[in-house]
Image (cartoon, rainbow, N blue to C red; front, top):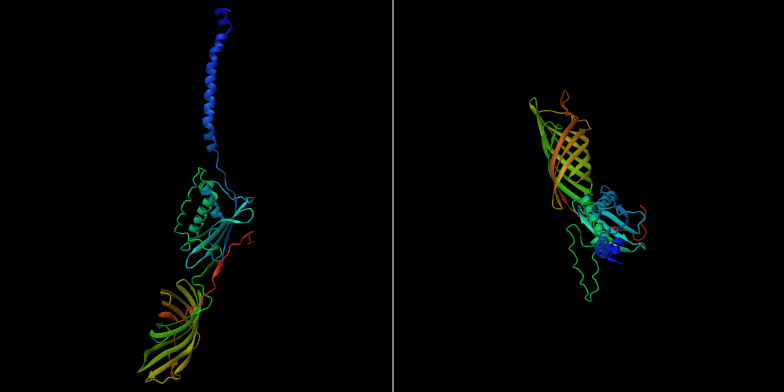
Length: 369
């Protein structure tokens, strides 16, 4: 066939297209080979799924519970890992420790109930929110596969294990999971305390009168029962050409309730008011004293044994008290008066310690609430 006829049939044009098509096919194959590792590396990492249970021991009822822990865990992971049908189970227990410490013990169980991970965290100054945030961070590290140490490839050399990280400031060294925690100021028996102080009454005798008081008390962490004795020095008033003075001696039973440094009490006093005169004759020199009322006060501790206290009473007189001669009534006090006092309260015996509380997180199936 001639060259003219070959051009007319298109055979030469097809021959020229073959190298170009072959080059395009090679470029497509090379691009697919280069992009396949990138696509594999861009695949979404696997997500963790776990059941979550949070329990709060007595004394931690006001601490955030499962809601805040789940919310913070989802924020750190970028998704919510809590799934009621998950194989893994994460369990946490919040409880109080000595002083103002808040503790948390955590475990992760596999499908067979075996413990695969556990932690013990501590927060101070009653900071439950900080404790829950640290719990979320620890659980995130335990659940996020990207944060786990990957095993080294087998290259003939055995990789050395990484050094153990230093625990954070808030986290204590892990004790055994069933840890006995000694309560701070929670004594099983009372402490015997005693003290003395100065008082001043007004509105009860003829004039404002100073005095002194002594007391003993059985003191529990938030309650006390005390017995007080006090004497008010004579208050004197002038009547015609004579003088009339009255002094008071009484004993009081005082139950009190205490919250931190503040205390509130009620008291009942029983005693005698004695009157002395100069140049005046009165009918009776002694009368029954019966009174009751409330008390409010504050204490400032100095160590574990000594407390300085200031308090004030509203005194409601229940007995009749008057100074009178055969011909006239010289003085009748008001039925309501007041007393203020300062005193030192000293521990005589130490309170007997309560048995250590055991913080226990049940193994195996989760215990019912």
